[in-house]
Image (cartoon, rainbow, N blue to C red; front, side, top):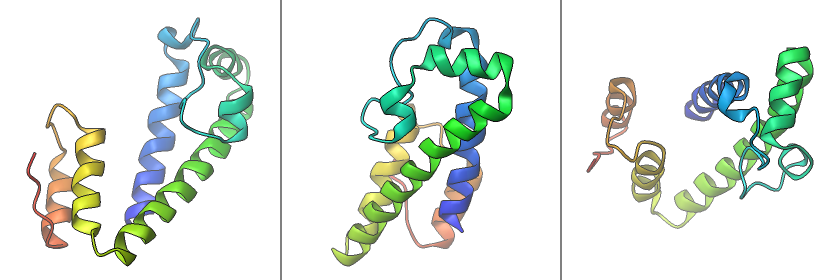
Length: 120
């Protein structure tokens, strides 16, 4: 369930970012640390141009990236659980995605229900 929520939020966020003007001239990939086909072959500027002309084609490319991201996330979560460091992993993940400490209330509520306290 958590991974599905993260996937939906990430896809919406990435698609919104791609359409913004700041991507118009950006020659770097969506995520420089990602090894997916989209990040290896397409720049943010190319995805921006695709979004302006054909949102379905851009959505497909971003979905490839999203699937690769979710596979990495699943592997990382699985490893954290096996190594019994899942709460620490979650705290680091939330801190990475909300470095300013502005963690949404729904995230805090969900983590509290899971018994994970945030230090942020």
